[in-house]
Image (cartoon, rainbow, N blue to C red; front, side, top):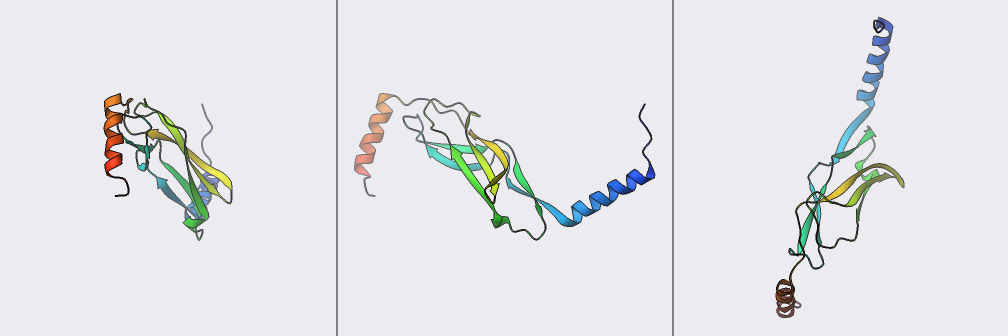
Length: 133
């Protein structure tokens, strides 16, 4: 059996929590499942694929610190079809002053198969007629 918690320890923990809540705040930068960007998939059966945050990523910042002091770096790996929904295709890295402080995966929002020759041909023809427009 464990030791009973002493009133002194409870007081110390309470003071520590009060200090943390008074001096720090949490800021969510990306929610799990949030679309971060879209990328073109070379020879994919869909021309673009949405990339999502694989998990919620945020920062714990001292009050008075500006959100602008943190940088979000989106790293997208080379992606070729086929791609499966949920497949890790990159990462989101949060930095402050060049130091990495948080990171999460970037995942595919949907399946993307390989495009057939007919689909690729239609895209090529369409690009000829929409060039510059």
